[in-house]
Amino acid sequence: MTIEAIVARYGLAAVFAGAALEGEAAVIAAGILAHRDLLSLPLAMVAAALGSFAADQAWFHAGRRFRNHRRVAAFRAKPAFARAVAAFERHPIGFIFAFRFLYGLRTISPIAIGSTQVSPRLYAIVNIASAACWATLFTTIGYVFGEGFESLLGRLRSNHHLWWLVGGLLVAGLAFAGWRWYRNTRA
Image (cartoon, rainbow, N blue to C red; front, side):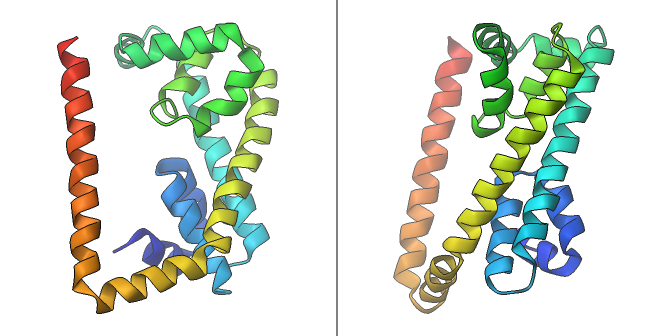
């Protein structure tokens, strides 16, 4: 079952859960469904913002409460954790606002921030503002480009040559990501 089908079937609850667990794809799918009048765009934005906010609050409090637990310690051993803490120390409020937009730092950042001395109240205030901006951006992308996505999928169904192009781009992207991962693990 595709993300779009799950969101269509379960509605705003799926948008909330998708924003909390998966991220952009579920929220863009909600925007596409709002474009089709299957969901309310403002309610999809609210559900996405609340889902993202709730997940990041939970990760923040996990980092705060369980900072010495072995799983949090395993996160702290990762290079991304050190990068997140360093970025947070340079620009605390800016980093709290921006981390959800930074690929590769979305999950680890709230844990890293939770392990610092930042006020839970400050984190919550900046987090809700950031979640609202993030949800608005990605549901709007789905809404505005929904017709284009549908048109592209329609063309892909009828033209198998485009499937080869999409498959080739996907393989190239995966090969590049694998090469970067291999290079970074050897360093």
